[in-house]
Image 1 (cartoon, rainbow, N blue to C red):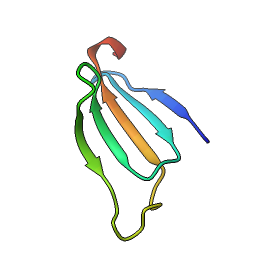
Image 2: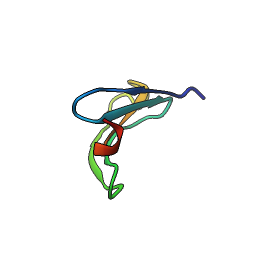
Image 3: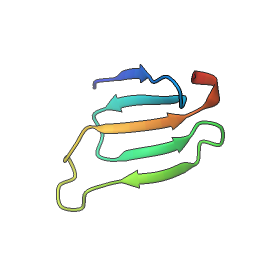
Length: 58
């Protein structure tokens, strides 16, 4: 298992990386999944990046 996070200035996005099969874009306030990126051809095509947007992390 690998985890890292990176704070980005301006827009308030938080990027978290882990070794999973999907990429999720999640609303930090509602925890709703806004978008999902997956590959039906190759399920391990990339390490997961979960991008969370919140005004609190600006």
